[in-house]
Figure (cartoon, rainbow, N blue to C red):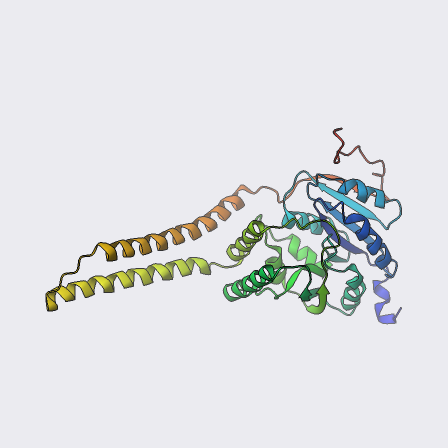
Amino acid sequence: MKAGYARFKNQLLSIVIPVHNEAAVIPILLDRLDTVIATLESPVELVFVDDGSTDNSVALLLAGQDHLARIRVLRLSRNFGKEAAVSAGLREARGDAVILIDADLQDPPELIPRMVTEWQKGADVVLMKRRSRAGESWLKRLTASLFYRLINHISDSPIPVDTGDFRLMSRRTIDALNKLPERNRYLKGMFAWVGMPTVTLEFDRDSRAAGNTKWNYFKLVQLAMEGITSFSTKPLRVALLLGLMAAGAGGMFGLWEVLKVLIFGVSTPGYASMIAVITFLAGVQLLGIGLLGEYVGRIYMETKQRPIFILADELETGSSRNQFPKLKVAGDDTAR
């Protein structure tokens, strides 16, 4: 090891992996992680966050504890969603640096040594940018591109385009993230808001190694709305601007009708134009009310101060908790 990197040799690396019904891919994931960890000189802990899986994902992870590096399995009390699961992993990770990676292996774990090297050179954040996106439809790529450009246009904290959760973060970055109190969480925006010295590496994203994606377009739209409303109030200003434009257009139209009668003596039946104007104004009002409702709803959820997640169990090797309790997994009706 180079002398400049010697101080990193005994610093712990945490690899945080959210899991939800990923039994099909877990054996492949564990094998590839085992190979990668063998090349690292720093100690490693694998922090799997089970987000309410109903298959045998947890059983497979526990089986992996027999032959792999230190594994911690955090079981949430139910399915709270990926943002909450990642937040749980970040809060519970003990490492001097934390690497986020998805369980589906679209983000290759073989890139982890490169990320660690950049951290050892002084980067607080090593961001992985997707050069290509295998296994994704043209529609998903298009909507993702449009979303990033939209949110970067309206947000005060621009989000790097073509990036996901795959990244390395230093301990001080993690500590800063864990201090952010909001319950409605859009992590990509929170990562960007925290900042810190960042190095970006490009990579080619793979297709899913096994199983099916847990995302659908409804969830993606929901996440997009979370991102937009969490990091910008400009949509409210857009509604205000549309209202002013509609009012101005209505006033000009009314003035024109009055002038036609006074100057030309022409009276125009107004049923069609009246219906058009009323419909337009109603649409603008509903848009404004809807946007306002989104923000008020998020304020309401924040005021409840409910926890982001509830941790039901922590199962860990190399600790006093080696005698694991009986787990309820797919096909087993025995409660804990």
